[in-house]
Length: 313
Ligand SMILES: [Zn+2]
Picture 1 (cartoon, helix red, strand yellow):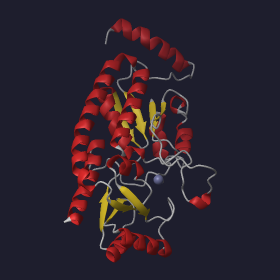
Picture 2: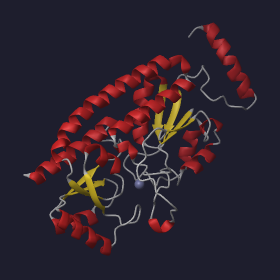
Picture 3: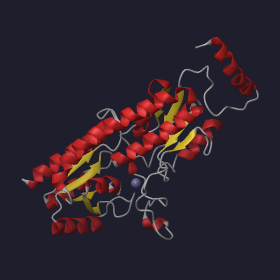
């Protein structure tokens, strides 16, 4: 780093620190932008776009239900040091985000600060409820279904949003962020071409899912979700509803139950036994087995197309 540039940029940061006002971006003395995301998918995309200029961590591990993450003190400590907080939005994080942000006492990442990014901006939201909603409807998200990252094209919107914010916080490295975004998009496009080929033969196949988390994925690949094992979002299946699902599956000849790995599969197995269906258990986030966002989607498409292939024989 050029020493004159260093002094000039360090000075205002230093003064602001002395005044206990935190600047929006990092001080140019710091190596990397410290990025903290709510989910491991966002962490993966932030790593792709941020490259060598960011250090990224995620609150969610990728193996847990993203609706129900505990606001642990250790997360607040991590959030204290973050330059940028990235969330899915649409109230997915409503149960814990406020507690962590407040507990962090970090003004840089509070809502409406430049270090707070909601990547749902620009996403075409599905299932935005019309009219009033109340608790009797289950865990309905009033701003629309938040599981939009399962449509690969929404991955591009997420990446674009992250790129724009990184450039705002760190304009000096804007060209690198742009280049990384192009590389991420082309990798995703290549993968997408393969996924379309894999799922094309099964267009309009009927499937049942555990949670109402698949409308974006199903829309993109033209699959028809005819029922969920949960009677309402977030409400575990009961015997009456299970019986209804079994009847629907029999009359509609549904052969696939698609579910995330953190749900209890006993109910799915019981329904599968009664209907001759196959249970397909997939990750919905980056974890130890699927190391990045594209690998996660690839795992879902591959498992699902293999299962559908087996059923169509
Ligand atoms: Zn949900």
